[in-house]
Length: 115
Image (tube, rainbow, N blue to C red; front, top):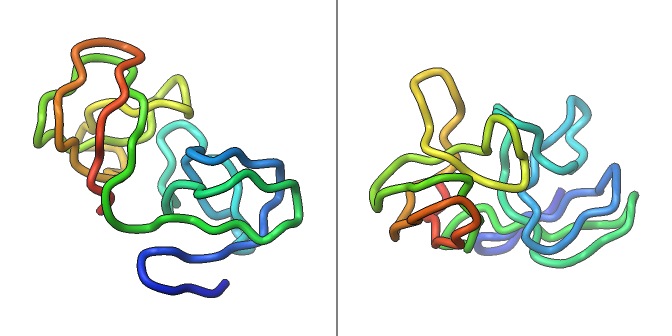
């Protein structure tokens, strides 16, 4: 793992696309985030094949896809049924950031300030 500014680099365990939410496995390798992840580290910056070095944005504002309506200021998490989207966080799940704009419905892309 290496880092600079708001980005860190991890070795991947699978093919990853730019914009994928990323978590770490037990050995510290990057993989696509699972639903309700507790090891979220950021969002992939570029596409990479398995076992490549992947740059991950760990702070700042990113654009993510909502699975339902989300109000600005809402704490968000990886969606509980679709790990490619986000939803409002509840007390039992890992917050990945704060919505900085409104999502009216499933599929809306919104900016999120990563925590």
